[in-house]
Picture 1 (cartoon, protein in one colour):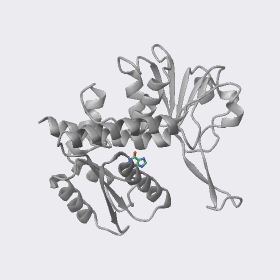
Picture 2 (cartoon, protein in one colour):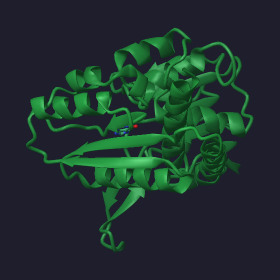
Picture 3 (cartoon, helix red, strand yellow):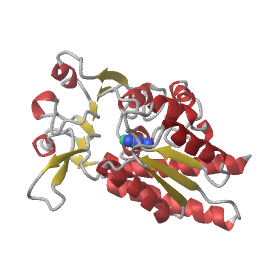
Picture 4 (cartoon, helix red, strand yellow):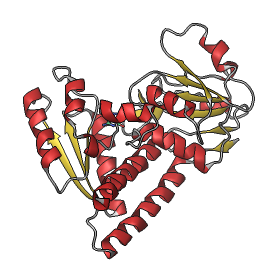
Length: 293
Ligand code: GUN
């Protein structure tokens, strides 16, 4: 079994990005600047956004963190987005999800300038992704593709089973893996909470991408020998033994699958760090597209 070491690969990518930034500085080009907007105090979201900002520093990007109170009005958040859209110093920005219930997420995502939408969540960018046009690929699916690419995993003609149909992971990765080219050319089955006889489907999978959020859901009886397992789940499970009061668990019963899978991502240290690296990659891309005009 080969561990798909997202921590190592993401560090390689960050090193490559840092070299690109040095080159840009040397040429007198502006360096990338990412802004992140977070609304409220959700612990996991704060952790993710903190990691994104730290990663900017690591590669030499400028970064701006905008923290807003959980009771901020939709109008005020739209105003913040409008300012970021028009701020020439910002190349790309993200609005961390989920947003509080009183805010219409679709309205917010529609307000982001597609050229600065480094999350790739704007309908224009999502549509382009489905049509094989130049866009920003959402960071988590982009990270999964890059991990597959860097471990040279065969995908052509393979049966990829995606578990979970979220707009952030399941839906886009199902489109990407079915596209022409590498990684892609796969036969994709997108499964979700209403899927019947899920394990009959997962047993026929060459590659399983699980983005469900149920700890240790995928067990050895659900997979065939040699399966490639990509675990996107990150759930905080309460644990008194741990100083933080919780442990992070993926969707996959990792230890139990060690004897059956051919490749597997650990949690933590698999897809999570890749997501951050690819957000940086998209921000670099946003800057390069601006430098090119
Ligand atoms: N919440 C969970 N994943 C993501 C992500 O990739 N981007 C944003 N903005 N919010 C998220």
